[in-house]
Image (tube, rainbow, N blue to C red; front, side, top):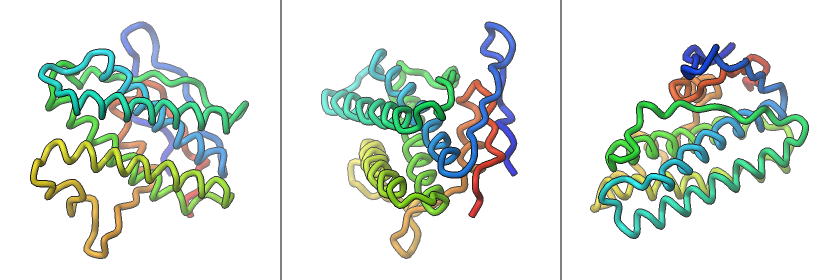
Length: 200
């Protein structure tokens, strides 16, 4: 069972941030999604605030649109969770050079691919059909983001749905919360406690 992100650490301004339990059942899964949406929203807010050198007009529009979507997802989940929502998290993007196109796009690709795989893996864990419908609507938008970011890397459009994320049956990969949180760990300052999330 995934207890907490091993990379939780100090941000240099004091002790490591307090532990954040996600909860259990559908609340836990929504908070798990809320972690990821907070991460993505925070990243794109920084991208848009400090556009990388040489950004094209079309890329600028894309980043603005994705930022708006991620902020909307974040705010929707916070409202849906109400008093059950986890705190606003703190993030560490020190490994990202926001002035460098390759660094920003590589990080965006990582986050978008991870987000799609996270929703694919978490959908089966939700008990509420209404919440599953909402998750399906969000993941379809995340998949559009992932394809858009990947398309920037390849003008021939041969990797926008590459075999590293799409299998021989045309199905996208699905990752467990444990795997996703471990992958996101280097960017999250808070200690996330996910040991009550459903596993099947």
